[in-house]
Amino acid sequence: MESRNAAISRKTKETDIDLDLVLDGSGKSNVNTGIGFFDHMLVSFAKHGFFDLKLSVKGDLHVDSHHTVEDTGIVLGQAIAKAIGDKKGIKRYGSFILPMDEVLVLCAIDLSGRPYLVYDLDFTQDQIGNMETELFKEFFYALSYSAGMNLHIKQLNGGNNHHLAEAAFKAFAKALSEAVAIDDRIHGVLSTKGVI
Image 1: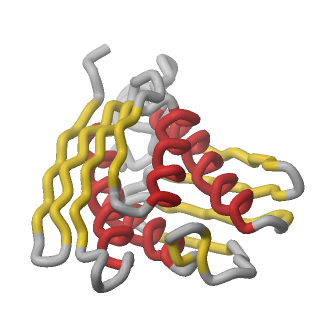
Image 2 (image 1 turned 180 degrees about the vertical axis):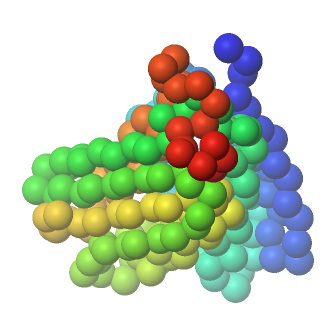
Image 3 (image 1 turned 45 degrees about the vertical axis):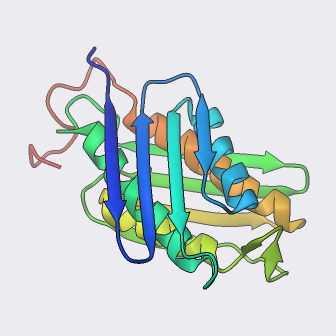
């Protein structure tokens, strides 16, 4: 099988991003966004999805974290779409329910080409480390739309805010890993329309 990877660069007046993604990797990562907790989440995403991820972001953190987080979502979504390519042979759907101590989070994905986000995480504090919790929704929204992905992230049981965020990123990684997996039984794309 050919290596499924993508390199994306995006430069604006607000952010300068270089990202390399390998879908069929081993979970290696080198991530620097300037936001420590966000780095931790993206490293967890790579590790638990077995994706190789190199990411460098220089953002206008003197303003706030919003542009850095949102634009990272845009670029990661673009890289996922590019690495998947024509979607031939992929399972297309993936889901995972991930426990982290008292927290339980469900993530379900359809790589349908039709972007949609359903997001139901109830954070009880405004910030974790140096990252605002409201930015998690912005990240997943930007990612789902730039990847053309139907993405559902739902809290089944809440608790510690760090656990909740980490469970969401790990559940997303596991669900995406399943959705991009190749299934030899699939000829062409998994759609009665013949196109995704």
